[in-house]
Image (cartoon, rainbow, N blue to C red; front, top):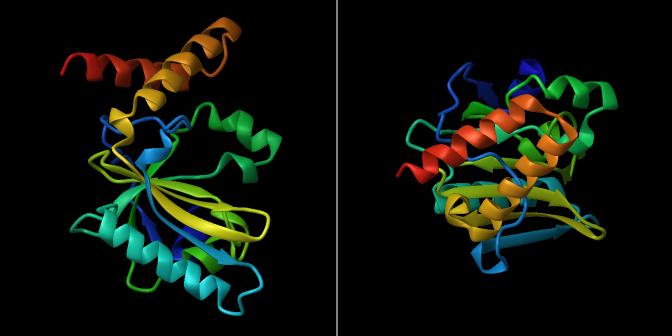
Length: 190
């Protein structure tokens, strides 16, 4: 995992994910989405424009801190079934640092961060939980967009509680259930 991320311009910082990091689920309200940038696949500068849009949004939204660090979640959709089963014992978020030379939408999307160059699929989280930044692939193009304050989203909180109950009924993914439970409990104590 480390070498492909280095080729994309991301240095993994081991064992440095803050315990306050919100588990990633969908469910945020539409009005929390901002900075949506779509680049069509037939654009000859598709990868370059996606990288530019990502960086502009990452810096303007506050995703990247003063040390150029943020959290990265490897996309489930690009994993094999065996890798998905192993994920149940791995942390979802990875703390990374953006290096001077990077190419998330080209070299990154060709490995863990998508399907192939110009076809990204990943989520990132600011270290302070203030913003999710997502990159996704659609029918006619790829897009990057941000979600404000996911930890304060009633829809996200509802989805986390639902996931917790559903996985408990099936007795699956105990590590993820534990992480969600701990995060929800810490939120109630504030």
